[in-house]
Length: 269
Image (cartoon, rainbow, N blue to C red; front, side, top):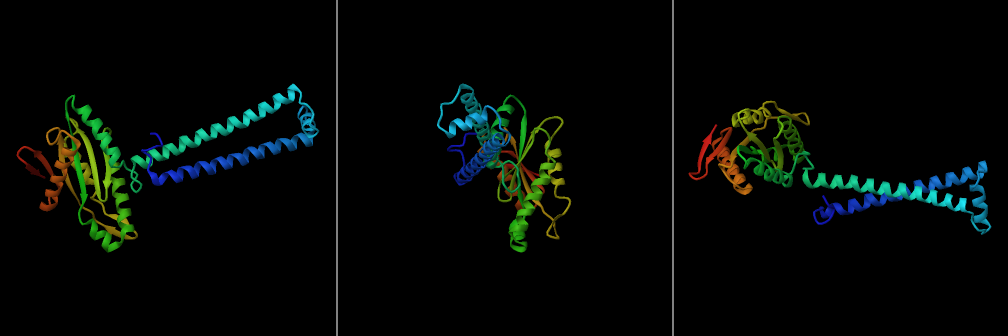
């Protein structure tokens, strides 16, 4: 991912500051190595280094072996410095990719990465097959924030995200879209049907969540849409899942499947 227009603007100063600090640190290290080598030359009277120092001191012409020594030492320092800069850029680029595609709070894929993976899943599924999109929304999350504070609500989101991630199987994805909204994507085949997927999601709320010595029971409302039956684009699919989730929240059902968009019918479970 290039560090250009796609890079979050608020992170660019952090990127520049990290590079600057790393570069200054390496310059001090190289200077330290140089003066250490110089000290060794003076102490142990090393040749041809000692002669090089004498020639430099009295402005004498340098001999070929002294010139080569300078070139080798300078080249070595330059190589180390440039290699370190590439390592810095590689590391910081990795950090930017993570911040651009993963949620800071839960460390789950964010909306941008979720949509990219949905696009790939659609392309793969067009060859045949189906996949389910489950829209997960907390019930009474605002009450938890208002009662216990936002720090408890944030920790609850982290713990719920961790539990949801623990039931993800190969080929599936859990992402946080924002707020208290999560998205679960799962391919459907003979070995994995919608009932099995929902059973795994619902299992994550069986045990209470302990936060700051407070035990919390959390329920989710879940709306499910099936590709391509309930939508052939990401927006259509998520709208169907959101509609199903909204009705599930109103009805108080555990989850709701949006089955027939042409008739707007809903199946509750």
